Amino acid sequence: MIATPPLFQDTKPDFDDVRLRWSHYWAGEVYQRPLVLAAAPKAGKEWAWGGGSYSNGIYHKWDEQCARIDHWLENMDFLGELLPSTGPDLGPSQFAAFFGAELKCVAGSEGTSWVDPIVHDWHDVLPLKFDVNNKWWQQILAYCRTLHAHSRGRYLLDICDIHSNFDGLAALRGDANLCMDLYDEPTLVAEAMRNVRSAYQPIYDGLYEASGLSRATGSCGWVPFWCEGKFATIQCDAICLTSPEMSRKYIIPALEEEANFLDHCVYHLDGPGTLVHLDDILAIERIDAIQWVSGDGQPPMHTWRALLHKIHDAGKGLIIYSGDCALVKEIHQEFGPRGMVYQLGGTRDEILELLDWLVAHT
Image (cartoon, rainbow, N blue to C red):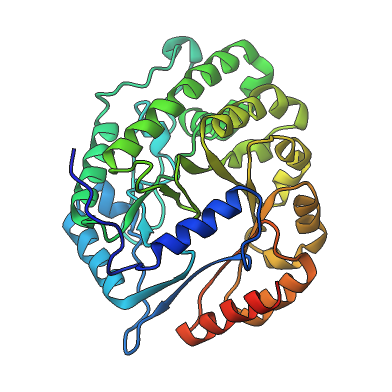
């Protein structure tokens, strides 16, 4: 295993303070102010982003990705509780690829990837097996190790956007076919769900180890929270295709299992179609916070105040993303500091002023 150098000496020298603030957050305590995740260009530098196109990972353009990360670290300041971290993702269907599907990415659409369904009859493929020799699994592990060696303590690798549980089945079978199977082949769907659920922990642990993560480094996810233990963003975007009765049978137990395995997690709640399931999601005790994404063509997430209050009143944290420091001040005065995390951009001076303002008004 590659030895981990001292963390963030040049990129986030206040890491000890950040660690303290996150520890209070996970304990349900308010320490001075709500948390802020913000990045701003250094003086005389341009905005840069350390995330990569999925094609870089899929097509072995790993040197190009490393150069992109170097440019990002040279240009950006990481403010508040944001730590420099970036993911080795191969795209939202990578979990399905670990079960034998073939990942695709085309020029001009590097921000996504997909697979063609490979399950045409459940009887032909069950039980589904996670093969540790699968080429995509071995590729993402090698990609993790390459980025970890490149990081030299300057940044952490995020735990991937895994898209496990029912999302993985939907990619393998196709959305429409899987929905029909819930009625036509419920026993086979239940078996398939048991199969993919059993793979979540070994996949997480494999990524965690290959990325050089430990309790000394802590871990981040693609929603850029941090904890000393094992963190991830969990989700099921395909839950919007099911009824509450179906999701309680097949999906909610899988989400609860993932949340119980992790030390801390955020749930990615994606689009109005998921809201019929909100009460069941909020009832999962080990989900710490909710990231609400209102979806294309919908009002901005911060305008859904009744929904945000419902989540907050249920004892879950909230992540609010905005480029407007004035909006953060408004929401802070409405919601208070408990469980709140603000993700935003802006100039360094604007963000530092906001941090001082939040301390003064908490």
